[in-house]
Image 1 (tube, rainbow, N blue to C red):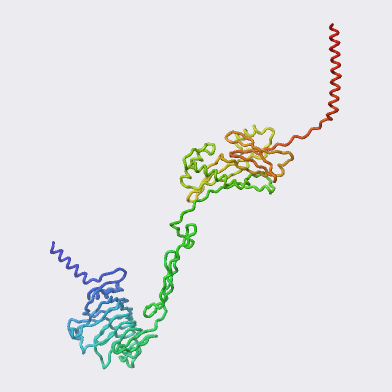
Image 2 (cartoon, one colour):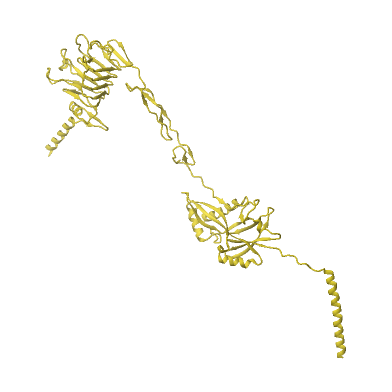
Length: 525
């Protein structure tokens, strides 16, 4: 068993050494020649990252789009034996591949002096391009025997940076960059340092050629030719508006050749919320520190305007302090409930009291509305009608009214529900009645008959200067506005004549009666 386990571990170690490691995203990490060759030959791999230095003993051909990130590591060319029939390490790029070298690494070779195959008689290459391949070299060091990059057919090499050198010359000059004669291949040089080689006047071509790209220039420092370019601003880095919670960015620009930022993007600070009543007016977020203000209870009273003529009886409240008085009365009831005090059953029904207690416990806002409704005779409760009829006497009914104080509750979610009626107040409330012209008459007097819990009470009314009436009450139920007209005057005879006539007639009658009595007495005797 131990032997089998040891064999299994050894097999796994070998497999790991040969198989590229897939990193997060699309990068494939390689640490040796075998993994590198396998990754290049794998059509699904589009990005390679070197994790270790290694020696390349065989040619590799890239025929796909690929990014090689050297990650600061070195690939060293070598061969198993010396001889022209043994291929040395070299990278061929062909087809219509689009390849990028980045990561500031290095390609070099195992020199003859170090036991390698390359010597003064060999023509070593780092990279060769043919067909329609495109290679972009962003940086790195390219140390060749004779040629760093050779292009043929319609291939194209774009060099943005890096250091290029060769150990040997051919025909008395250095061939760092070599364009095959009569091919349509292209070099575009925008940056980099070239040892003993002027890319603006390449002598490897006939006639010599300028490999510099548009806007690029070269200067010579000692044996080095240094190329630079004027950065353009063709690539725009999109800005982003700041939000209440996230920073934004100003617009920036990149050089389309080398990717250097030419206009830096600046951070725009987050705007911060603009809260109004606990809600951000910009994004709608809720203020976590917002405390909902305690809503003041609302009191709604019926209104009348005694200065305006009315076609029907209208009842309302004109007192400026009525709202405050009613609000205080209801507040006292709420306080009594919160303090556990007993509520008089005459103030409200048990159902209303139960509902009110529940809404107070739920911290609902208790509102109040005085409602005056004109009733038709058939709408008056039968028992109330009987009580009113008994109390009328010689009065006539102008209108039947239902006056109630409705309690409502506004819950935290905004829902409004009716709780019931408040039947009695601690402080009486004064109502104003506007009488239409057709109900007014000379000498006519008005009063209110109230029926509350079966008890009938006649309430006096006050005649106001504006022609309206007022009455005061502290109980709310069925009312009848009544009126009484003055009796017509009767003509009376002259009182003096009548009085003398009656006196004279009385004396004569008395004398006659007296005579009769005397005669009767005399006759009796």
